[in-house]
Length: 462
Ligand code: NAI
Image 1: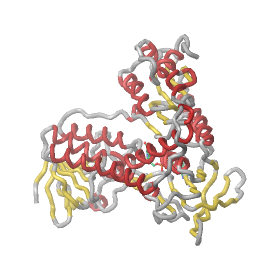
Image 2: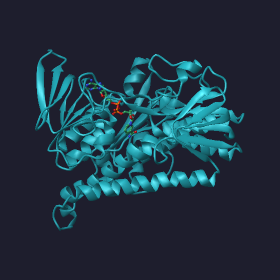
Image 3: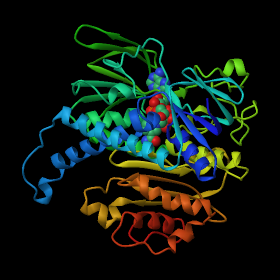
Image 4: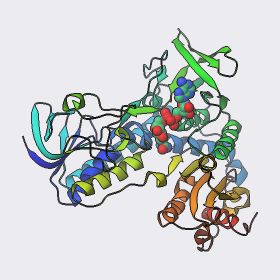
C-alpha cells in the first residue's frame, strides 16, 4: 500500500494529462490503468489509429486521383491491408510508449489493473489498496449500443472493431452520420468498399453548422459515399453470407433493407463508470449517466473529482486534456478553468471539417445580430495548386462589435487552421484583428484572413 497526493483512474488524454500536470505542480501521483498500454481509447482504439488509417487511405486517394495530373506515373498503388494495419499498430505503440516515458520522467506510478474506490481517500487495484488525498475519475466513455443491433466486433462493429477488420468489406453499412461514421466510412470508401451511411436525422454531423454539413455531404457523395437520411434502423440480422439491415424512413414510415458485409455502429458514446463503486460511495450521476460535477470538477463526495468524457461537455480528447490540466491546478489550489464554448471540433476526413464557437443556427435561435464572412477556397492559390479547393472558411461575428462568435471551416488542414481563430476568440478579438494580421502567401491560412476581411469591406480574392 502506498500513499499519494493524487490517484487518477484512467490514463486516456484526460487522465494522463491530469497526472502529468499534478506531478509538475509537485504532487506525488499515481495513475490506474487496466489496459496493457497507456493512453486510453484515444491512443489505443480511437483518435490515433483512425488517423493512421485516414492518412494512409488519403495518400491512396491522392495517388489514384491526382498523381497523374502532376506528372507522377506508376498507376494505382496496390493495397496491402495487413501492412496498413501493421503501420496503424506501430503508430499506436509509438504513442502509448511515449506516455510510459512521460510517466517515468514525471515520476508517476502506473498502478496496473482496474481501479475501484472502496471509500473516499482509497483506491483499490487488484489486491492492493492505496491511499489518496485526491482521486480523479478519468474513465472516459464507451460506444453506445442500439436496440436490435448486437455488436460482435467482427461483422457488426463499433469503432474499435472497425480499426481491425479481417479484410476490407465489399459493402459497409454505417449507422450514424456523425464523426466516427464519416471518418471510418471514408477510410473504407477510399479502400474501395461500397459505403452507405444511415442517419436518423435529416442531415449529417448535427452539431456542426448546417451549411458546412450540406457542403460536406456533397463532397463525400462525390467521393463515392451513399447516404440515407431520416432513417431509423430497426435491426441488423447476421445471415450466412451477409448482414441484413432493416430501417424505416421517418417521413413515411416505410420499411427498407440494406445488405452489407460489415455494419459499423457509430451512434454516439456514453460515459464509462462501471465497476468504480460510485453507487456505494453515493457519487451523484446526471440523467445521462455522467458523473455530476460542480464546474470545478468536484463531485458531491469530498476529494473525488471527475473529468473528460465521464462528465458533461463535448466528448473530445482535447477537451478531456484541458479538463485534466485545469483539475490538477484546482487540486493544487490554483484557478484552473476550461471554456467549453471555445473547444474546437475537427473531423479528420479529406477535406477536414473544423469548427469553434457558435453555429449560424445557434445565433439565429439566440436572436443575436451577426454577420457572416465567407471565403471559398476556389480563391486560394495554394488550395488550387494542391487539388484541394473544395471548401470554404466561414466566420461569424457580432454585427455591432465585430467580435468573433464562431468559425466553420471545410478544407485541407481545417483542423490546424481553426486554432488561429480559437486564439483570437480567447483574446476576445474582432474579425478585423485577423483581417489586419499579415498572413504568409501562399498558405491555406490566407483563406481565414479573407473570411475575416469578408466580415468587413469584403474579401480581396472573391
Ligand atoms: P456522434 O454523436 O458524432 O454522431 C452520432 C450520429 O448518429 C448522429 O448524427 C446521430 O444523429 C446518429 N444516430 C443516433 N442514433 C441513431 C440511430 N438509431 N440510427 C441512425 N443514426 C443515429 O457520435 P460518434 O460518431 O459515434 O462519435 C462518438 C463520440 O466520439 C462523439 O462525441 C465524437 O465527437 C467523438 N469522436 C471524435 C472524433 C474527432 O474529434 N475527430 C473522432 C471520433 C469520435
